[in-house]
Image 1 (cartoon, one colour):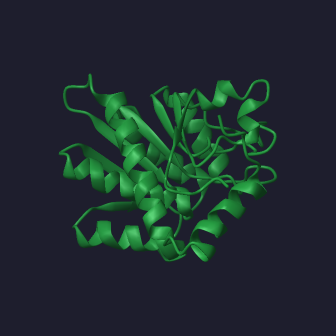
Image 2: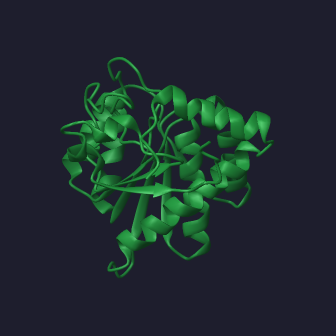
Image 3: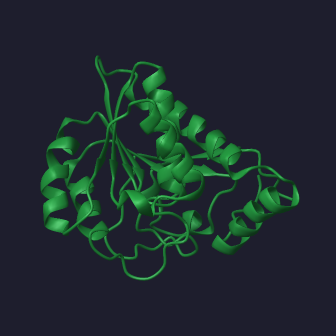
Length: 221
């Protein structure tokens, strides 16, 4: 099995794939999103009329979530997307995939403001969901988790719904596996390209749940 990789090693892999090999970042995001969507289907297969709530931050994890929303919607699954950032903060490949959703007529709920107001609007959506997809924060997260993400993560955990984390549970340090504050307690985590070193640390499994390694076309050597 390929050894787990640190935050910096994962970044080097991504740069090598995009800059040296010429694989577009949008292709990697599409590959990731398709596999996350597959995992989501497996987690809702017993629900009669499943509802999936995708929580997206402004970065690439959110972009993966937009791809997931598109594929689930094309399969006839109800997928609601909540963007926890200002619309104009979503750029690059994530912005491209958000543009695609909007051109499909997909309604994106944007919640950007004080934490209390966001959580009040989020709680009924969480309660109605059969699955929550965590695309809030990624491997680059460092330092203490700030608002509004701290309260959002607490609300997700309090809702008690099954959670599928994209790449890493939001709030976890990629290298140490330690919580940086409130941290998503996922049922399952689909991680891209390589396992993260933090996943091997004591206590990390309480946050990652079952870990699925997704091959998104990034050469590891």
